[in-house]
View 1 (spheres, one colour):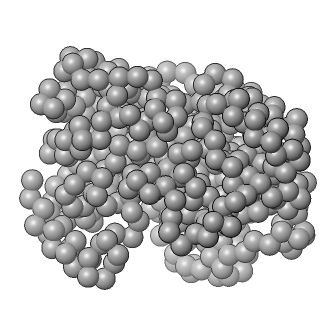
View 2 (cartoon, rainbow, N blue to C red; view 1 turned 45 degrees about the vertical axis):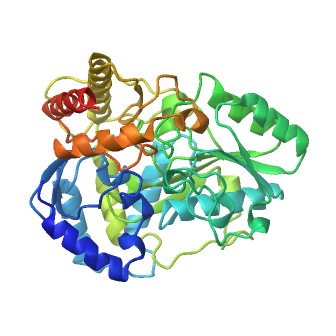
Amino acid sequence: MNRAKSDQLFAEALKYIPGGVNSPVRAFRAVGGQPFFVNQAKGARVRDVDGNELIDYVCTWGPAILGHAHPKIISAVKAAADQGTSFGIPNPFEVTMAKLICELVPSVQKVRLCNSGTEACMSAIRLARGFTKRDKIIKFDGCYHGHADSLLVKAGSGALTFGHPDSAGVPAAFTRHTIVLPFNDADAVKAAFAANKNDIAGIIVEPVPGNAGLYLPKPGYLEFLREVTKANGALLIFDEVMTGFRLAPGGAQERFGIKPDLTCLGKIIGGGLPVGAFGGRADIMDLLAPLGPVYQAGTLSGNPLAMAAGIAALELLSEGRAPQAPGKKSEIKSGRRGTPPSGKDAYARLETLGRQLEAGMKDAAKSADVSVTFNRCGSMFCAYFTGGPVWNVADAMRSDRERFKKYFHGMLAEGIYLAPSQFEAGFISTAHSKTDIEKTVHAAAKVLRGL
C-alpha cells in the first residue's frame, strides 16, 4: 500500500509537532510504523492523501455515529458559518442544544456547555466537591476522564497504551484526593467508603469503559454504584463522553436504567466539531457561576458551528422517538434490512450491525484457532487477544499485544482501519453496511489464519 505522501507529511510534522501528532492516540507507537494522513472522509470510509480508501471503525474516536460528512450536518455547519463562526455572546443554538440534551438524557435537568470531554469531567468533579463540601473522588483503574491533573492516575486510553498511566508534570498533591479502584469490584468500593467516611464527594465512572479497549459492567454493578453513593451522601458521575447518544438516545444510563447525579458528554453532541457538556440535577447545577460559588467558564463554549452540527446529529438520531421515561431501561430491538442510516431506526440498525460483526469475528477467531475475547455493547466493540473474559483493566492487560500489532497491520493491508492500540474501543456507524461488515469479517479471518 503506497504511503509516500503520508510519510512525507509525517517527516515534516515531526519537525514542528511533538511526536508528529496532536494527540498521542493517533500515533502508531503501540503498533509500530507511522500514522497515515487523511484528507477526505465520507460515510463509513476514509481516504488518505495517497488515495488509499479504508473502511473506518475509529469514526473520529466515536463522534461519527452517522458516518462521516452526513449531508444534514454539513449543511447545518455551512449555514451557521455564513452567520459568523463565533460570537462570545449567547446564541440561539445554545438553547436548542441544552433543551435537546435535557429532553433526551434521563438524569439531566440543566446542562452547561463547554469545549471538550476533559473540560466536562474536570468541571463535574469540581461541582461535586463544591456541592458536597468534600474533597475525595473515586475513579476506576483504566477509566479515562480526560487529561486534567487530578484524573491522570491509572488512566486508560493513550496513557495506558504507552505504559505510563501517571503523567509527568502532575504534582503528587494534586492526586492525593483521588482514590483509584478496580472496576467491577463492589467490595473495593465499600472498603473505600468505610475508610474515608464522610470524605468522598463522588464516584466518576465510564458506565461502559471504552478507554482500555471495551469491557462491560457486571450485572447489578451500576445499580450498586447508584445505591452506595446515595447511602454515603456522595454523587454519582457518569462520564458518557463516549457512550452518550451512542448506546441509546439517552446514553448508557438509558440503556441500563440508572440515573446518575451528574453526566459528562461530548463527541456526538458536536457532530464532529470540538465540544463538551456536563449536566444533572438542577439543585447541583445551580451552584455554578453566575448563580453559585463554583466557577466554570469558556470563551468558545456553545460555539455556533459546533452547536449547529450537534443539533443536526441529535435530531437525526432522535427522529420519530417518543421521550424515554427516566429510570426505564431502553428496549433496543433488532433492525430490518434496508433500514435508513438515520431516524427512528438508527439504534436498531447499529445493534444489528454490531451483532453481525460480533458473530462473524467470533467465528473467524474460532476457525483460525486464535484465542480472542470479543466484547461488544451496541455499536462499540473490542477484540482482545486473550482467552479469558475481560471485566477490568487487569484482565485487558493479559492480552497479547504483539499478536495485536500483527493483526492491526494485517487488517490495514486489507483496507480495514482499526484503532492503533489494543486498548481502544472500535465504533460502528449507521453508514456502515452489511457488506462492510462481511468484508471486515472476511479480512479478519484471513489475517487471523496468518498469525
